[in-house]
Length: 431
Image 1 (spheres, rainbow, N blue to C red):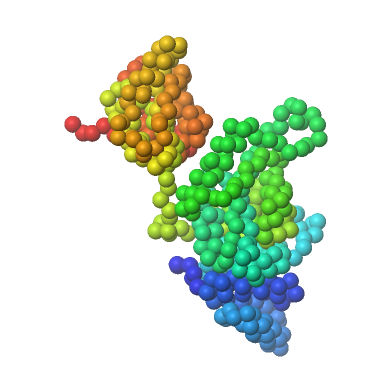
Image 2: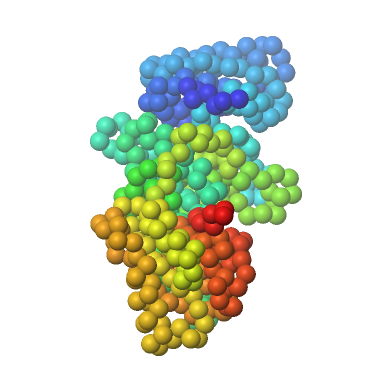
């Protein structure tokens, strides 16, 4: 079923905190021109108690209508509130589910989960857990921005967070801060002293920031004003909470793997830890959230790596790499050989690589770089150079890397098995 983009669902238990969170849901519904579906699940055993619940639901709906939002109440009778609510969510497929979450006690970490946590980790659509309703008060002024920390990784799994943030920005002015925390093994010196804040080597920090910016650009179509990359020791959630405090985030958006049963207890979940650790609002976007390819942004390749062995087909991959590179981007042409590529021989090979640069490259991109690398495992060397260079795209010929003994075999096939980046393969034309 296609998600009902004109509906936001809010679940209430009539508590004071839920009433404040309902105001957040109404504000979002009004700003996005959507209907607010107000749901209460009652386990009342008598008709009289059920009538009281119905009356309270209508009173709350009328209160929320005063904000200008269109509110449609729904009363359910079920002894299993989470299951009943999830049934409605799966049937109506709202654009967003909003639930309230109060302060947690020390035993909550070991419990099977609160109502809000169970909903967030089971809902097929994004779920906003409102911990601090006052954080949304900044939207009362047209010039004030809602600061959202986007907790991302560099894999495609967190693309759902960026795809959620794209339409959410229509609700009002937002400052999106993409964030990536990378785990770091403590050195012997770091392990010998009290834990502090680890630091990435400058080259690694630059590469991670560049890749994070590309991830945002590919999914949202524009560059992020700022990104945060920080290494951490131990668990990532406390690091994300610390960053959220530093940037004064009103909301943290994170992907949810939605683990259940024993897998939930055995596997670490960043989204669950954030629901425990963070004192601010958290939106959990399911990793299985449906994606419409028509809404995708076309990625641009600003760093393209191409390898050749100087064979005819290997050289033919270079114009393809130039064509794939975005305007103003960088192209790197490499040749990988054995020890014979050292010294003057390497200089001669670099000149030979420069002679392969197409004349039409002109002002399309920056002057291509050339480099001669020494390695026994050619495929591994290409993958390592792609990581070091931060390639957005790697370009290879399908059979053009086997002219010499060192490059014999299907290097492209080996690269395809190992590489984690987009790969453009130039095939030999049929004769």
